[in-house]
Length: 348
Ligand code: KG4
Ligand code: ZN
Image (spheres, rainbow, N blue to C red):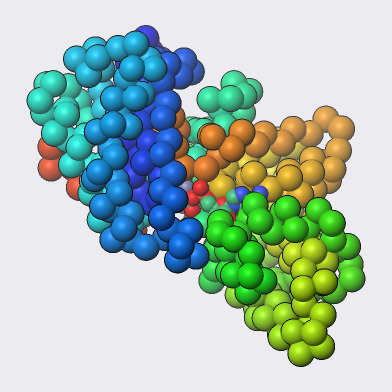
């Protein structure tokens, strides 16, 4: 299977993407179309996402094939995100991949979106292979994992409420900054002093021990409420505008402190100083730097470039190759599932 061509398709949220991967590492073509329409609403509107996927997927696939210099008939297998995600959006990709597989007489394999985020980093850094501690942080998910080998994922902790990216998006909305929130908060925070407005670090205190509830879990909704109160107070005093860089810096510092501290707890428990970051929030410079600094010399933090850390089809193709190498294919009854369980996930 290793020299074969896999076409990956991703339509789980607001990126329409297709990629052609040869073997495990050779990315021959990769197109990502980010649906801009959602900016108008400050968040993804599911129905608009599905319609935009329907309109663009054919062209996106054509683009990836053209870039790779191959035709649809050269593809050996199709890999498609089947979940988790927006059901209408997922169905567009799944229907497309199944139709292509049927028409070409080639296998199709369903891929779990979050497992694919784990594989994304290795497309850029071949050394980002297990064992490692993984922090998957996106608009919909926040998971801390111990990965001793591909296919075996120990869930150490997750968010109890908002995902880390969602927290950034909601905070940006409160501050009147653009969607998606992470990058705009990062930009505003550059001129800010993070200690000027102290914000809480939910579920983070020194007394916690491994095995205790809350040792690895995270929570961001209380932080969002603290931010709301701060914004209201500053607004009343007519100081909000001037304080935005400092408030953005304080918020970013609080989220990053929680994420980096929980990650370091796993590094310590498993004696593994290799950390893989995935998902859109992995783009956060503050997060990368905090983990790099805390790991110190002899530690490695692997964070993929923006094209590979946000939603993309290259990672879907890569995770598909892993499943195909294990002899797994899906039938034409393959279906999308908004809450698809993570394959190989074990608690603790
Ligand atoms: O993985 P992704 O592209 O889509 C989902 O599957 O959700 O992640 C998008 C999320 C958004 O919430 C966005 O605000 C966040 O990633 N994000 C960031 C940064 N860049 C993107 N969060 C913090 N700092 C960033 N620099
Ligand atoms: Zn994602």
